[in-house]
Image (cartoon, rainbow, N blue to C red; front, side, top):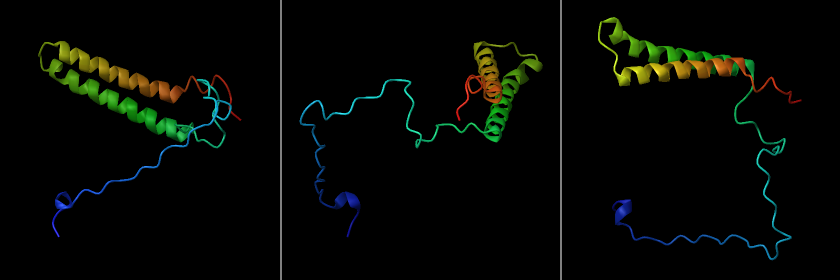
Length: 112
């Protein structure tokens, strides 16, 4: 019995990758920005409900980050570099949500 660490180590055999016999058999690498195969799903779905949910969530998260940084300023504390940075990050997150909602890149061309 015993733990896994007390057992003797068994070597694992890894098969060697197949080697191309000549350069004609090697497949060319796709160019950057080249269209992928149609069977490959996009990284992010481009449906309206997905954009609304993620955009609204990012706007809400950015508003919360901004609000938490602003709260001590309302109590009379002077803002420091950390507070200003937190406010900028909150505004940036909210702007990212607006970009997701507006989808400027998806409207440039249609994918049918």
